[in-house]
Image (cartoon, rainbow over all chains, first blue to last red; front, side, top):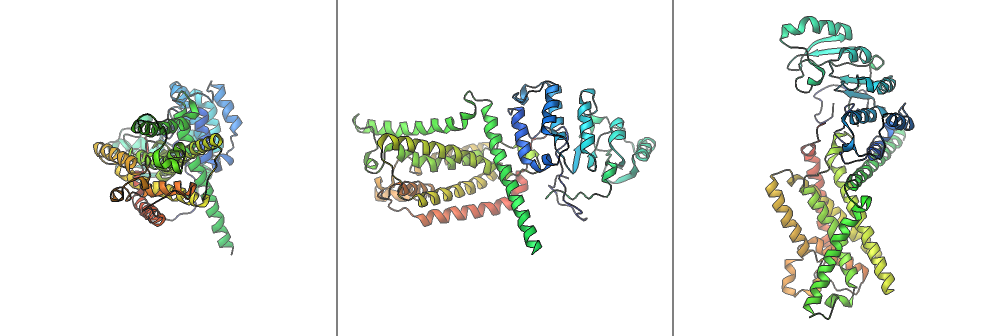
Length: 207
Length: 281
């Protein structure tokens, strides 16, 4: 997905912009101010900001509602505000494909406003997630894939069928169901889901 | 015809996006440093200014001691330049070169932006060099303006040559920086050793403190191998065409610059993936 390894085979159907992991803050130095970070990403992903359904004023309004001032330095923010800012920043831009590895904060109560904005941004777009949070899956996803330990596809289909299949069969494979935050340690269960409007869209990487 | 127009449009779009990305990383680096500094955004100017004034102080102080306390200025170079302009001309060429080499050897500390797929290691290197060049050019032009205002002697004989020399030096610095980025990935002890060696070699052979014509003829080959010396001396020559530049050649500088740049781009193209070590979230 990140483009580091070239695909072995297949066909590129379209050039899409893939966002950074939703809620991820790895690219921002902790010494930066909130305003610096927004300015930086707005310049790098200016085209995605232009297409965004969330205006920059709306974004600043949401941040100020939770007490995040543009002049604050990232490292000075308490953890919940840092999570909120990182998630808000991911939601601000309109990508063709969103990567959502973690959903714990996204599905929490303080992130309700951001969840609604993300749903708005996702209209006609695609998302990939490895989250095992059922509430998230039901709210955001339509399709799923169950992968085996070596990446083989064990089952693919509509979300409800996949969940049912996983409930019935995963124990036969000796695979315990994963907690949401364990996904990066063990990818035995890899649900790969996408928004219904995006069926048929090709994701061939960004060029 | 439409295909050509589309290709051109895509090229312009990609280039403008690349430029805005590089400028954004340059601002990122300045912003990052400004929050930890007591002088804020001025940090990017104050830091090289301190080093520049320190070097000018060394040169003036050394000359003062050598002359037995009677002469503050720069000996025979005084015939052609005010000592501050002489040093500033050398510094403006030498410092971006040295900075980029050291930053590259440190393994591109500004690695975080690589987290974003649109940013590549070369963008970071170019952004760092833009910051260095901006700061140094601002300082040099400021100092030159100050000295010219105080002495009322404005002189720039060959501005075209000065621009060419500067651009060639920037190309050479970027080429050198790219080559060193790959060295920076290896053992820390070795990179620290190389950093120190390069730093000292650059200081003492780049003509920062001396003019080539001041050296005895038999000692010149020990320093004229260094293309930075050629750049420094030619830059001074472009300010004052009477300034003697024995054994200094524009073609040597041009060749070194283009070969280093070409080689480094090939090296980068073939090994780019080894530099992609983003900080994990």
